Amino acid sequence: METLTEYLQQQFGSAYEEADRARRAVTREAWRRRFVAYALKGIAVLGGLVLAVGLVPPLSQWLGFGIAAAVAVDGLVSNHMRLITTVKATQAYGRLLRSVTRSHQRDLSPILNLKASDPGTAQRQLDDLNARLLKELHMSSERIETALDEADLKALLRLSVEGDEAKPSPIAPNAP
Image (tube, rainbow, N blue to C red; front, top):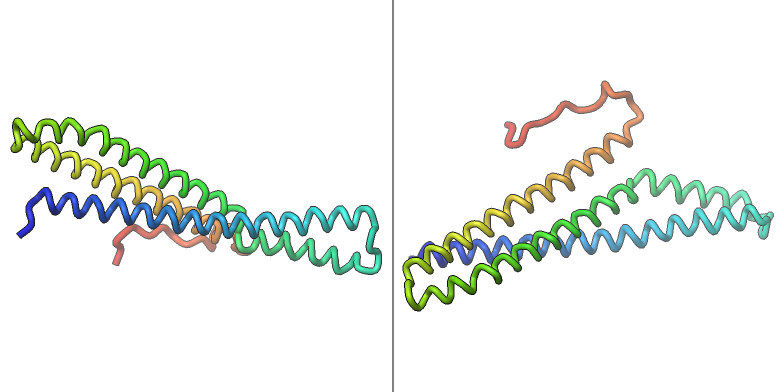
């Protein structure tokens, strides 16, 4: 049977790894979306310059269509909005992981020093540290996930061609 300390350490390690995996996932998404954003922006800007200078008059109509399509694709897939959201999430996860790591490193040393003279108190302090950091990981990760979810919903609502009356009603978490 595992002890409370073992359980808390295992839970803390799992929560830390989960937050790190989420950070890596949103980082990868941000890089993909950044590439798409720069590509679409490049098409629009460079295409606009070519049209303005009149370098390829026979292709002007197709170039204009390409520019309009690039702008439309960016708007329809909400790439720019999601890019900003994923960069914010990446930064938030990074801050969370750095904060938890620093707190753990800072607070663990005195506990380890106390272990030789008062193992019982050291054990309780270690359990408290792991429980506090576990709670911080869970609460902060949940806030980041909620922000990502809300940004997705806002992007979907902006796509609506219907009026405000077509917006769905709020759904409470854990609703049947």
